[in-house]
Length: 51
Image (cartoon, rainbow, N blue to C red):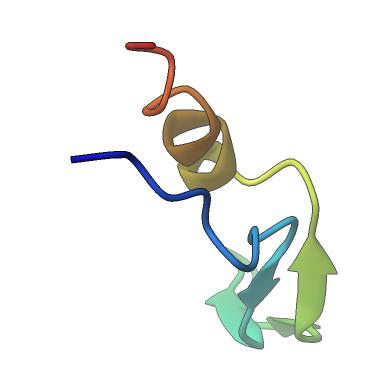
């Protein structure tokens, strides 16, 4: 059976908004953003190297 190439390739991962409680009692809000260098992407890019 021939292997099919994927129709789409995920190039970035959306990281949702995060709220961190700082030691001095303040809250730091990091807005949601797209991360092109997410660790999940590097793992998935190398899974097809068995050719």
